[in-house]
Amino acid sequence: MRIPHPLLGLRDLREFTYLGDAALIDRPEATADEDKAALNAHVFLRDNPAGTHRELWYHEYGDRSWLVVTRDTRTHEILGAELARDVALAAGRDR
Amino acid sequence: MRFSAFRLIREGLTGNRGWKPLWRDPAPGPAYDHIIVGGGGHGLATAYYLAARYGMRRIAVLEKGWLGGGNVGRNTTIIRSNYMLPGNQPFYEFSLKLWEGLEQEINFNAMVSQRGVLNLYHSDAQRDAYRRRGNAMILSGADARLLGREDVRRMAPFLDFDNARFPIRGGLLQPRGGTVRHDAVAWGYARAADRLGVDIIQNCEVTGFRIARGRVEGVETSRGYIAAPSVGVAVAGASSQVMAMAGMRLPIESHVLQAFVSEALKPAIPGVITFGAGHFYVSQSDKGGLVFGGDIDGYNSYARRGNLPVVEDVAEGGMAVMPMIGRARLLRMWGGIVDMSMDGSPIIDRTPVEGLFLNAGWCYGGFKATPASGHVFAHLIATGQPHATASAYRLDRFERGLVIDEKGMGAQPNLH
Ligand SMILES: Cc1cc2nc3c(=O)[nH]c(=O)nc-3n(C[C@H](O)[C@H](O)[C@H](O)COP(=O)(O)OP(=O)(O)OC[C@H]3O[C@@H](n4cnc5c(N)ncnc54)[C@H](O)[C@@H]3O)c2cc1C
Image (cartoon, rainbow over all chains, first blue to last red; front, side, top):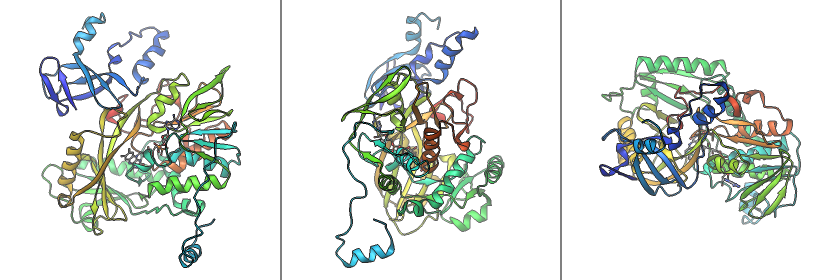
């Protein structure tokens, strides 16, 4: 697997570590008691699809940016990669 | 047909004409009392124990492919009970005891071989951790021996004891651990279940559940609708897909784990040897092949094949601890899809849907659990209550803060 880094081009899998579903960006605030179900779902539950998956990769042995990679989990075909920062900003988060 | 030495001789003398298929190939019936989804080790064992221990009848196992095509036929065959936490260790020791009587019970040679499992340590801290683990094992009724460097050298003189980064200082040995021929486990349970009247239906994929007023009524399959008031799901890597059809999201990610087998060699390796520090473990099959592996690849996958960085990592680990492995040629390698849970421990529980039961989250280590998993899942399905050794494997343990996290890694499946 090679990941098409938006700034650095095709990079080898060895340079990255994997976190998981890109939905992890949307951490709920969960300050009130009634938010606990949302926080539980955020921390522990996953869609885990067989097919297209948007997921967080960290370019640890590179520029140390977080990427959102879109990948087919059945074939490992990589369909795209964006900077996670751009994804978070576009979703209205402050970083 | 009972298997015995007498039978073998008789068949040998009469041209082997008396052997019959090990199980029937029935068409799916319209309705059963119990349906088990998934004909892997756990599903087949569950069906067997439901019939044999709990007296249940009218049971079907529905398997989308063929028996042994999933992880039960892809694993590296290691059995052991060297866990540490109270929610886990008694369960795995229960399983090891079931392995010890399994072949007699199901009248099938599964080549259960208690050749010992040795975990190497390289530092004082690791030795102390293994001493603690060994004591936890002994408390659960299992066996454990802490070995020094010279004890290990007598068992496995070929290891690189003076490796600069990971010199071998000793190991934790479980003499009763070992290996089992994995396909024989699937076939043996299938045959034993079939003899008790269980319908084992291959090429039958479950494609949906019929649920009314919160109760399961049956399953839709590629071979038509089948009714049942009780459905147990044991589909390993496919758990999230199957349970999504019942409207559930699971604390599970599916990952690929690779395994490797060398060409056949003369007997060289006494038991199972694990080099955790270098992500490598190895044993030698009775055919002579070195069977080895390492860590999961580490990203969500349903591909049943992994990538080269892990191949390299495993090969490096092997070369570091056992340089002689460099002379062996690799014969085969493959991957299997493992159901990694959020705390590294399994789930055996009821679900919010009445009559629907879940057995999942086995990570890279559910083969050793096969007999106990089947036994306790059958207990849950038959009685509605968790079995004493599996009472911690609850589905809601995550939100209740009762995780069973042997490695202390948190909700990060690729670190367990
Ligand atoms: C490479 C590798 C090495 C391993 N090494 C070890 C080891 O040394 N020791 C150990 O203890 N464990 C090991 N494991 C883990 C162990 O193999 C698994 O945890 C265990 O086999 C899972 O249970 P099972 O046998 O029931 O799974 P499986 O054999 O995978 O059974 C699940 C079955 O469900 C079927 N299924 C899926 N979806 C559907 C559907 N919709 N309808 C009907 N059927 C369906 C599948 O086709 C499959 O046959 C290893 C795993 C791998 C991949």
